[in-house]
Image 1: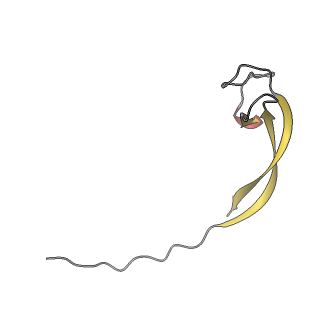
Image 2: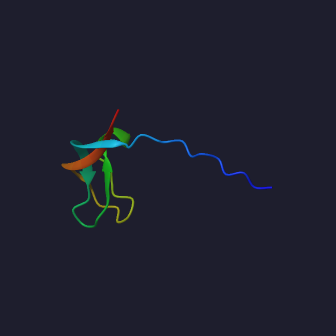
Length: 63
């Protein structure tokens, strides 16, 4: 026997653009958020060159 349950309505997530500080690689497409980096001067995990500071706009969920 198959019983179809009513799906609960989930509220839609609301996003807003936020400027986030990042480390980006000048040699390839690698980048990471500064808040997730533990090194003061990180190297790119893809090409091993020194990364430089930058800013990127990202969608962030607003609660």
